[in-house]
Amino acid sequence: MTMPDTPLNLIGAVLTLFGSMFLFLGALGIIRMPDLYNKMQAGTKATTLGNILTLMGLGLLMPGWLPKIVLIILFVLITNPISSHALARAAHKAGLPLAKGSVLDQLREDEDAIAAFEAETQASSGKGVDG
Amino acid sequence: MNRLFSFIFITAVLWLLWLVLAGSLNAQEMMTGAVVAVLVTLLRNDGPCLLGGPEILHPRRILYAILYIPYMMRAIILSNLDVAGRILKPQVAINPGIVKVKTRLKSPVGRMVLANSITLTPGTLAVDITGDTMYIHWVDVESRDAEAASRKIAAGFEKYLEVIFG
Amino acid sequence: MVDLILKAALVFAGMGVALATFQLLRGPDAPNRAVALDVLTLITMPLLVGLAVHAGRIIYLDVALVYAVLAFLGVVALARYYDRGI
Image (cartoon, rainbow over all chains, first blue to last red; front, side, top):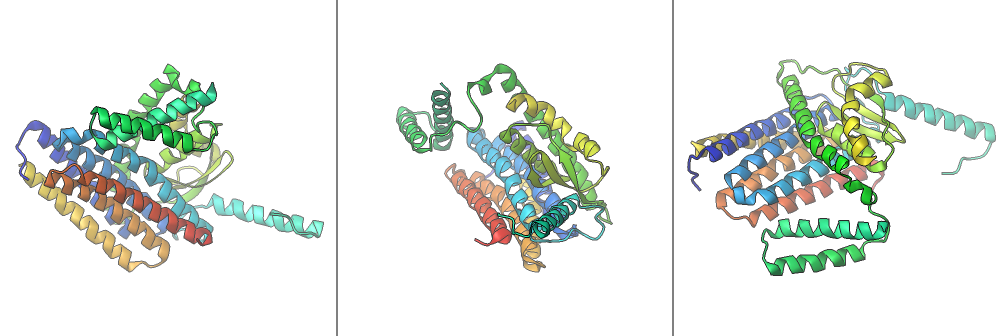
């Protein structure tokens, strides 16, 4: 469908262009970043902004659709961090290591400390700890 | 009182959702939406609304919730540009690690929104949470100390969320 | 002019889809593929909305919405699977 060159349409199209650039950057990020966690930083978050901008731009092209498009944006904003958090947490629990250049991992340190403490109490009480 | 409020609140939200999805305001749609919203609210288990009682509609909280949107947008855009710059450098410029962050928010919903906000701003990603301690994967670790990291990552969001969720 | 800009946007999004698909096939392990899948669906969703605008039919927006819901559920299910099995 051809669109007339009204100012509103132009703003919408430019927003869509910026958004799709961020979509592309997100995909480039997952190729360039070294490990899963950094991939997530680049991939899922840059695509969130890309999503917001693209959908807003397309919404400006079709002003009557804005309520529904805002609903889709809200849905993406709520679900996207949850899915990337779930994935990162599962990967960390499964023991996926951080990239070589990483400076510290305080979660692994704390988990190891708790495991050591539990092993110690188990040994001293002579019985298994419930749960 | 509290149960009546959560019933009305949830029904209203569901009804609004129905109207947006239906995309029209004629009488038929509105009536069907109202009936379905009431039915779904009746079917849900009878606990209180997750967000809390009538105090969530306090004008001050609503004002802060509205102010939170532009603040969040600004944070998302700034950090996106930062991460985009890192990706486009010939040698990917990162200094990653997982740091501990303490939050002073008390309500569980407030903590959830804080974790989601932290995850939505690129450069920081909530990996795990136990009690008031969050473990954040940070693309560019600027300080190893929990205090300083909390100030850098969470303090800006907490200022708003403290008021919104009490 | 508007059409030209939209075509450029389509090219960027298409390159994004290609890169994400490449990463999805390359792996190297399952969690990395899951991230690639997540990104792929996040790029495809605005493309579906763009298709709706192109066709001028608001009903297609529902397709994009349901696609987003299913993609979210799929990734969370994968995450749970790595965590402790389904």
